[in-house]
Image (cartoon, rainbow, N blue to C red; front, side, top):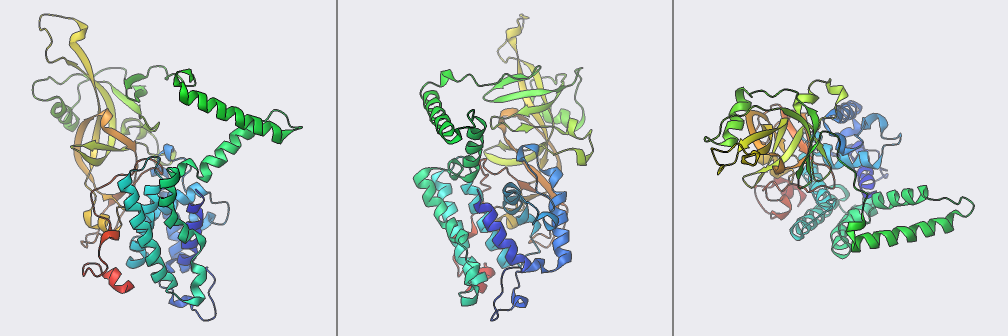
Amino acid sequence: MHLAANLSDLLLSLWRGTLDCGPSDNVETWDWAVFRDEGTWTIHGAAVENAGPYLPTSFDRKPRNISEKLNTGYKTWEFQLYMFGLAPALLYDILPRKYWSNYCQLVRGFQLMCQYRITAQELVHAQALLCCWERDFELLYYRRREDRIHFIRPCVHQTNHLVSETVRKGPSICYAQWTMERTIGNLGQEIRQPSNPFANLSQEGVRRCRINTLLSIMPELDNSHQGLPNGSVDLGDGYVLLRKRERYAKLPDGADAQAIANFLGARRMLPRIKKWARLLLPNKQVARSAWRETTKAREQVRMSRNVKFKVAGQFRFGEVQYFTRLAVEVDDANEDSDNEDNWHFLDIAVIQMYSLPDEALLQLSSQTVASCTHSEQVLAIDVKDIVSVIAMVPHKPTLPSGLTEEHFFMIEKPGLDVSDLGVRYSAYHDEDDEDNPDDARIE
């Protein structure tokens, strides 16, 4: 939605110190204007560009170097991926802590509101986060000064209406500008009478409404579903294994063999396997594997091998090494029978795990910066435990504990279900909490 671009323009203008400054104000006192320094702004733009190869192809257009392209047609989708995906991690330790924490509340509330599906509890969280962001934004930036009233643009107050409008109309994706522009474009392509375009356009709209109504009543009439590619295997529930596939089966070894053995249990022998390269998910994302992606240079790949999955009721992140099918015997099979019904496939993904996110940083960022290390642990999971394809972008933060080390921060595609990582949002903390010095400064 264009609200993303409007908010991005406001915040970047503040952080760059380019917003109008009245004669009674002094831009030198704007301690939030961290990008007034051209060197810092240039380095930040390069970091945005360098993150591009780590964003999967399913994330669509990747953000360009914002320090070079900001005024040359930077797209709304680029703003959304940058401002509500990359920037919370890239601005950590650059933007002063009180401004950064306030900004993270906006990001998290906006992420929740951009989902295709949203629960009542998530609406409560989003309302708390967005209201807290707006209040603190005014206290931190505007500070109730007459010469800064222009800091409070309509988009600042619009965020407070997102939840109430969602309750009335449904998720904002249903009526956002993305949907309207796509519909207008589709209808425009269907015009066949240039001499009378508006009458033709109205009739095409009526026809589209009639077809949609009929399909909603009788979905069996919908024959628009495309077939699967040659060589693919439909696993059910929207999961499809896609090639490439190894030609010859072989026994796994090393950590992979141990992970598969743990998955099968002690009673089953380790079978020979053929590696598969890709998996189509129910949300239409395609998860890829290190087995094939690592054969290309990093600049030639939009990394799509990092996934979010659920294990033991908890969301975890990992890098898919490959997918495979394990031919195993049914537990109650007749030992004297060679019937093929005694065998079936277990479809698994072999994954190298990321650690759990740093909890202190997760708390400070209102769950917007899930920063993990890449561990050596290898795990085999059922492919149907995979929820979505995510981005894991490298960075080297100084954690709240004082430790500085190589990490990866997680980004989810806007619109898909947002992970609740089990940390309480800072918007619910009391303002007089002694453990929250930022709120104390705001007072």
